[in-house]
Image (spheres, rainbow, N blue to C red):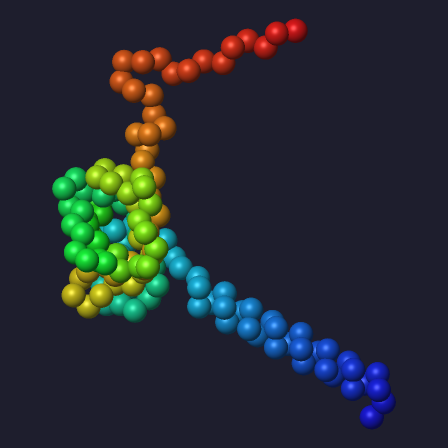
Length: 141
């Protein structure tokens, strides 16, 4: 076999291996965002799938138990019990009434087991009641 042919076969093998590894990593890390109502309708199909579920943290539902944090996400009239078992600390904005996104898997006991939590506090960015929104000063010429 000529040197160029051996080199071409090697390059194709390396590129093929890299593409195969990349596709496997993408498929493994992909998650689908679901609303709580959609998760309820999925039933047993939700078990074992990596999902992201969003909602508002129910006031008074946050309970810290060692490394676990138990809380309830709500969305309209739907509730979902969540247990966070991740190694990262919870965001500072994770508190009652905050919008949160839990990334994890649904357990057979009906509890969503989250390994990641993202949170934001919408009220932090809204104007306080009774105050006018900030206005821009006119540009000077």
